[in-house]
Length: 358
View 1: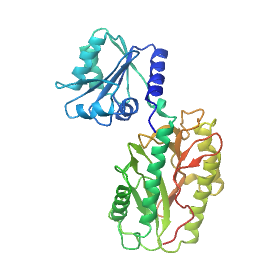
View 2 (view 1 turned 180 degrees about the vertical axis):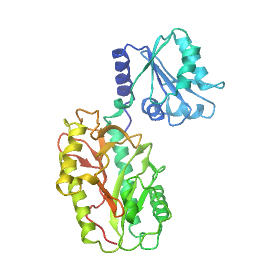
View 3 (view 1 turned 60 degrees about the vertical axis):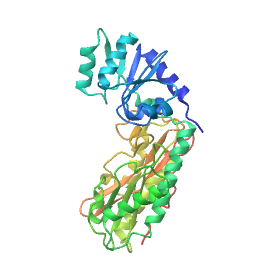
View 4 (view 1 turned 180 degrees about the horizontal axis):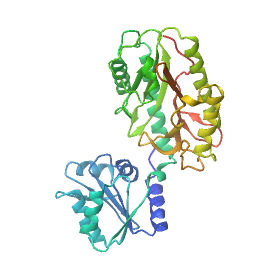
């Protein structure tokens, strides 16, 4: 199954026409990959109505010929932005879009200084990646299967006396053995009191009997990410641990029921947040409900109070990850990567979510 590069470029060129731009400089690594298929750094694309250039250096020319066959390959050896300025002059473009969230001020100033009568305009490209094509869905689905497999294996490893770092290392090892290129982000393992830290990356803390352990991790398959969080208990859970776990699980399952096409990101966040509030833990839910997943682990659309997404669309892929974090007690987060459909969300991560006591 191949990517729809033709459709991607058409959407981009439609945006250029709408914004009255002659071309766009694509400099964000994920967007370079999205439009060309090239997977490497130190590379930009210049795309206009009738041309598409890939500029890179000698380290990547062979790779670029293989991965971005439909692009004109330009090799630079005197500086990437010098070559960009040279090509802009040759193309004769006068209005050019730049990715303002990626390009530095010094890079922008260099282009302005070294091109004549060119107007540079900020352009947002990330939102064009929100709806996934069928090939993207399948790669993310595979990344989710790898993460699920690693979770199943890690359950036989976790026990009192093991460190968070050991758990993280084994999770990443299992994902590698199952086909992951790399972790999709820095693996989070937070046990006991550290569970109140939503982004509590693994430390040398030793896991004790009676503690909750939250693991947030993901695999990367052919450039595409997965994201999953599961919280388990080492030993028997206390009544309070069960109460908070069940409240978060109820909210997470409710999210799966209501995430669907046509709803806004802020609306979905609000109703799931209210569900957790009704169960007594809303004040401890201190982040958004979810985010898009694809070539990047965090991308559009967002499910949060500040979401800019007014209408979810089928084949968007987002996370559903409510949590509750109580200082000095710990916390619980349960997360799936899910596919948006016309009806309720379809979980791509399928690991068990009932409370596991090891």
